[in-house]
Length: 381
Image (cartoon, rainbow, N blue to C red):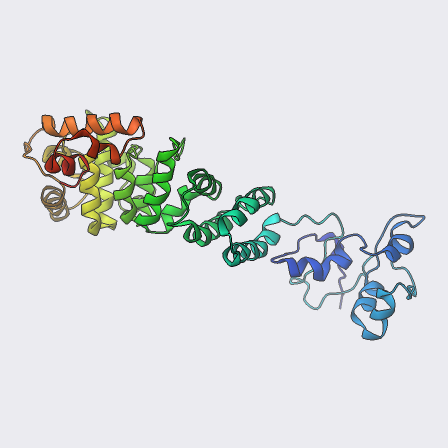
């Protein structure tokens, strides 16, 4: 019978999942960590190497560990590499990478983040502690990984809300730890309004180039945040790709009739179909979106032109009924899309002016228009 041997050191893959794993294998994987090893191990005449089995025994055997820690133990012999041996299972084995080990900083930051968060929560002056730690957390790049960033924001924002009145601190913290992505995973209108209010006070556009907060809330089913987003003038961005990926199994792009329909109208059609298909209970939020835009309501002809040959007739008529009963608040023509009322277009224009000057929503009450018109401008009716 022929036996096969394998040089395990040729296979460089190994997995490190926590800081504990780094410590447990660093004695063999990485360069020596003690002054004793620097003289006895790394500066050899032929080439630099590390102790393997000998060094591992010194660390694991209680009788030798104390001597080795106090630099009183010397190696019995210097081994230049791992032994070549037949593994128990030739097709399933693990080995160490005898080179430069690269460990993601997230391995350390994942365990460090809770320590910093607890220190801030237990501090007497939490705001001052957060100011001092904010730059430290940036240097440690705790904001780079989405899970760690969302954990820090979710933990500390409740320390700030609602008592912290330092708008610069609130906004800097929200921007650093990805408030934009947090609203997709947490439905909390009070927190959303709190952050947007402080951004308004310092006239800061918190969204910048991040264009799809409203659409993302629909996709991630955190539609309860949409009301606050619209209240502070967040603009609906139109791009079909944010919905088409989710509708890929239900609807193919090539089957949508695009002729004579603008890209913006196609987006509104796709958005309606997505909400009706996956999040039908969010009709109130979709109606609020239509209150904030100047676009004519979708006509039955447009909906049929886009989806009539894609969905079943029963599904199509249910979609029409859903849209007309839950979303439409004005009389529309069945055949063609008609312009919105002058009253509605005036509302959109006034809100755009107030939003561009960071006056939404409080600037509405300063116009002196009366309770009914104020409620209308605030998208409440």
